[in-house]
Length: 358
Image (cartoon, rainbow, N blue to C red; front, side):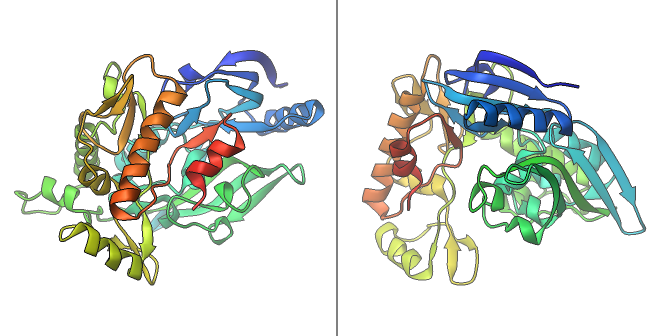
């Protein structure tokens, strides 16, 4: 099967923001072989390439992308069980929440708190997707990927993926090198669900028995819906990329200084030794931004201050203008720089440096 090449394809409809210009070339790849075809085409044209998954963690520039967008739609699920665990191997194009639902139906524990997260399987190791006390890196065993440097398919172990908070080999030291083709996860047969996060625990305050995996999945989806983090057709709060800023991870000394500025009540979560994770949403709210705040056609969700929203007719520059205002006021108030979580596509290097350089 040869990859079909399209020209000047609008990217906005392929993102949850519904924002962005056109791709100069667009190639849909349903197989590993067509991934190779797409990469060869980009090299022949001497153009950059970008791998598109579900478009749920992406902000596209108004000018679009002058290179080749490769849409990975590799499907397929394989299940391999022993007494204690089940290995599930999923194609990168599989819908992530569908996979979570299938695993919960099979009574497999390990990703139930990652319910309701939009996007595809291929994006989960790139961002080390996590929520409510679970991360993909907790259960991932290996990634099958296309190596653009060697034009070959490789298998990368969990350790080789170099996972940290919302980061991995794929979006840091080897950014633009690998294309995820298939991901394998090791899940616990009949395992106990995770209810480590306060939001999840609160859903079961009146329940005496241990909740089931299905009940935890349903609870997480309710929580996400209340925060506009569950994509619902027709809900204007869902024209977003979910959490726009990462929760800052700072040193113990920086956190002590933050406490002096912020006073009591600043959230603190475990992180790497000598580090503290705090809550971006708390910083945004205490810098003076409320739910529903608007700056032209861009605004904050009416349900959660961490989600920047296209209220209708917003373009990428509108989103950046609001992001700058939030970032600058949080820094002025607390001395903490917020870093965006979505990928920026098609922007010049100055914009990327401005938002992502620490």
